[in-house]
Length: 128
Image (cartoon, rainbow, N blue to C red; front, side, top):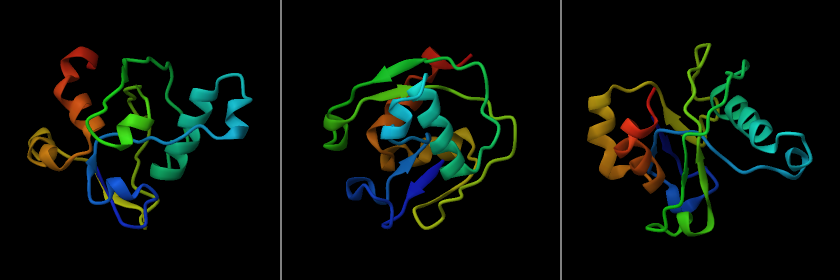
């Protein structure tokens, strides 16, 4: 679980908790054979230092939540991943966080951004 700090770019999410990593697909990735995978790999390298990208990928859902302003302009794709190596927050000026128990996630739920709330509350639909 991470918490977004004031140096993170999206001011509407400062101070909010998240149980996922994400970002935008950039122009260079848009021209790749698999822009979603390329964007995910870059974001995971940048945010948590993941060097070995897990396979296979399985899209477990699409998140279209308009309850927050950020959600009205973004669409989320949920790809649950089992990471093959230790990860940690690398963008420490933008976020803080680490591994959390289910009880810790439940306690932080009211302070989470909407997408994380949707993902957590619907985990029986996507957990393997």
